[in-house]
Length: 426
Image 1 (spheres, helix red, strand yellow):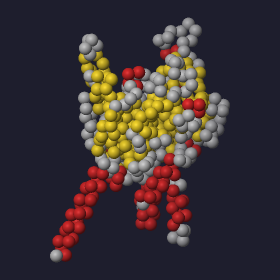
Image 2: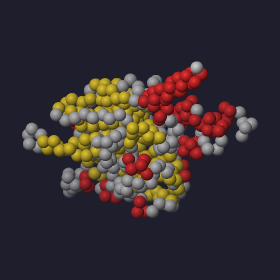
Image 3: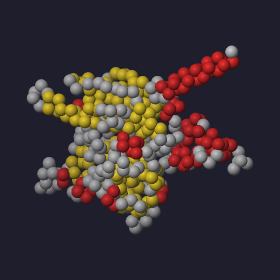
Image 4: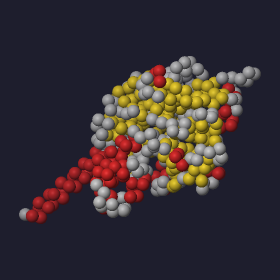
């Protein structure tokens, strides 16, 4: 390939997935130099971010042991015939220590980086009126992990006498910096909230002030697929992190570090919604939930009341009028047949949605025919069919090359080397 012009050669490599590029680094020094170039890495991230062909899904067993393997597959491999939907999967091969820290999917992710959170424990605090409330108190360390390059970066400790209610990982385009956002409130005064931001470049936390939207004061029952139903992880899209409350979608702009809000789908604010879930689907903000409607002769406290599952997408980001109901599932047996459902990925060219069920595994929903088909993963035992999954855009981003702490350490090492060289010449 030495006779191929470098720009053409580079353009071909830009179209390959990150997991393939990482393996191709071993082919030759020329390939490695091109693939490791920071400009190429950034161009590859941008190319994938704005591409509609990112259909890589990572998944693992929802209730399996800590070292349950992590796999990936491409939605384009679905045959979409009338028969069973079977798809091949490939192990991502993270190390055991990486897997031991990875919670059930979905996890907070941005540009191929995954935010690994510590385990959470319940802390019971007596209230003045004699009642008790349960708080999830973060323990341990937070890390940013790139499963393609196997790099892990431990974040500085952040400890407060507070209740964590929201977090997320996002990218600041203007500063070319990755940021972790942590929102909490004072356990002794729930009206007081704070927002903390970690910057990868500076390798430090800053407290930037209160969150103006007290969404934990208007608590909702979060999705049962989540490990921590009273803690929300932000959905990163369009340079911002998003969380959902009963009344609005809360937005944190990663670049300006300002809050905003988006309205819920029309005529939905007063409906009895349960298990609301916010996702990014096909490059659009997606809201899914069950509607609490009691069938004739039924009890309002019965699970049979959860008869509608609706999925909405905001086709034009920021425009309230652009909310479109993508599809709905109806019938009193929805909860009993499929359990809790969340959309994982949307393929416009195939007009279908990959769904994850907490009781039945993965399904392909055809929007045109309004039909569901179970998706079987080839080569994986059916016993492990209860998957947790999310769409994943891999990258070759080097964490240690961008971290302020590591950069400062490398600078000191270079300075010492130069000093030693100067001493040797004397």
